[in-house]
Structure formats: C-alpha cells, structure tokens
Image (cartoon, rainbow, N blue to C red; front, side, top):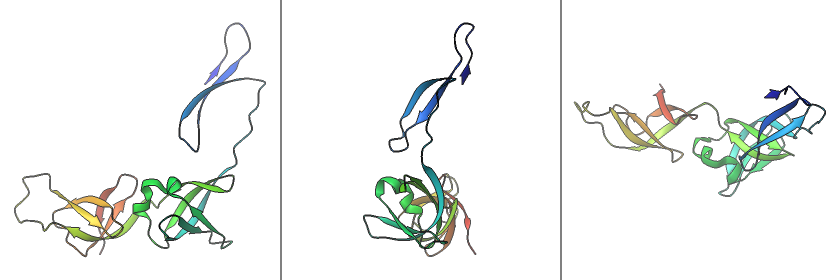
Length: 161
C-alpha cells in the first residue's frame, strides 16, 4: 500500500513472499528506492515421466528437458499423467513449483461397490485412482471407469464417456 504521511516522505509498504519457503515478509520502501526483480518465469512444459526421485518435463519448442524434485512437485504428483501439459515456475532456471492441468481424466482402480437404495448418507464413496490419488465419487461410479477430476480442489467432476 502507498502511504503519504502528512509530514515526511511518502513510502510504500509491501508484502513479499519468498519463493522457496513460502514465508511472507513485510518491507517498506521509500519513493526513491528501487528493487531488483526476481528472475521468475512460468513455462508450459509436458510431463514425461517420474523416476521416483525426479519428475521430468520437456519444453515442446526447444525439446529441452528439466527435472523437478519432490519439493517443487509437492502434492501435485498425484495429478501428473504422461504427456500432460503443466505450468512449471522457474527461478534462476530451476523449477520451484509445478501446476498440473485444471482437469485430469483418471481411471478408478479401487472403490467399494455402490449399494442400491443407499442414498440416505452423503451420496459419496472414496475411490482410488490410477495415480494413487483418493477422491470422493458418487455411488454409481465403478472400478474401471474413467472420471474427470478438478486438480485445484481434488473433487470429482464427471464421468468420461
């Protein structure tokens, strides 16, 4: 926020977030101060594979490959499918965060059978997907079906025909 006191020089109070740790810091800058911008870039990269330690991505225009560690991928690993377009945030050329597509289509590999007439409850049951993610799905979803999931909330969206 920009602050112009009645007496004295104007200044800006800024809330900054550290890219690596995620902690927030509050700084004050005078109107004459300048700050160097961070070398941060978002790139659309294709997910290739995971070798257990690193997740490998490829730039489709230059065919350059990048490896992201578990710290950069985090909980988003459960939404990554081969050949999925992801947004990878780079800081000084190194991946610091990976954002999967908003929606992914995954196969249900394990779920309880839905009982007819069992609609008194919440109307949902847990289902394990092909990537290991667990999502609450409607009772009519069966093993082997492909469902669409919102990766931002981790919620079931629809069945895929």
